[in-house]
Length: 214
Image (cartoon, rainbow, N blue to C red; front, side, top):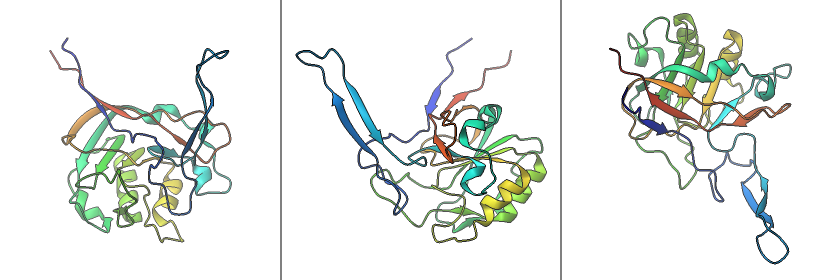
């Protein structure tokens, strides 16, 4: 069997990584450094639970929702379909996915950006309409992954898409980096950190080519 290509679809977590306006900036401080009397390097990290590529837990959008430590890991591991959507849309509406998601698709990833904004925060990202979440749930989708930082617009106070996700019991990945990854079927591996009581958790997300048949 030939070597299966791996696509790293995670943001590099680093000092200066763009974060949601007003959220905690990422910081990294060396607490121990290799030198006389010290054989190791150790760092103190300060970050938001939504830093970079991350999995939202229901606790993020529902007061009685489960935390990141209780997430069902099977949602974040397995076959996934990646679709490209025209960049610049305010929302992904049901019509944008009409006929493109085969029934029974369990994990759907959406590339909505022409190029991921690594250098600066971009408030004009593409959100998802709640009706689109309803459509995908009806087709059997259990996880929705996006390259945008949220399923809802930055200025939303009602979080309609998130609440649709909660209503259908779906899972969310946000902040994926899908530049250069062709549309198609892959294996997704994007396990969230086991942050027992947190509202979200960073992930190291990859796509891997599916095994060739025959």
